[in-house]
Length: 134
Image 1 (cartoon, one colour):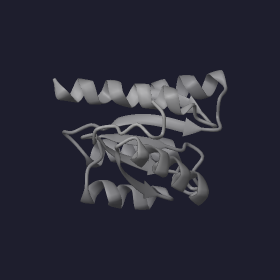
Image 2 (cartoon, one colour; image 1 turned 60 degrees about the vertical axis):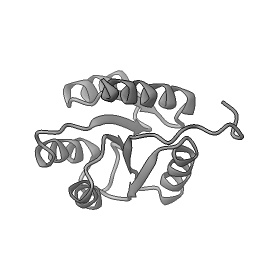
Image 3 (tube, rainbow, N blue to C red; image 1 turned 30 degrees about the horizontal axis):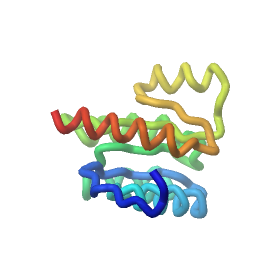
Image 4 (cartoon, rainbow, N blue to C red; image 1 turned 180 degrees about the horizontal axis):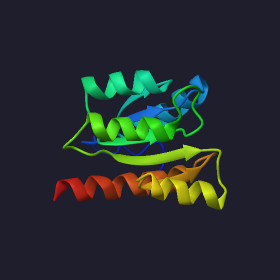
């Protein structure tokens, strides 16, 4: 899809949790251009508050957050949002085998290493959307 092609609006609500303001803004802008409803939280406590106000379908989560790390944010969001469980995607600079293993152990659905390949992320999100339509 080129940037000029219009994509129909998505039904996915995405919460981007990223402590780099520039990174969060860039990613959210790209996702909005793809038709997604996107909110941004720059830290864990803001993510918890945003999720309580409008539960996300997908959480794109930086693991290396200051204070409350991404693993803890995911655990708290799972507890807070029961019985609904969002899809969790790690978007992180941590790309070692132990990091991928821990993402799986922590119940994250996908682990992507920055810089994120937007084609891979969009394909994954389209799959999530198809799954929700069933």
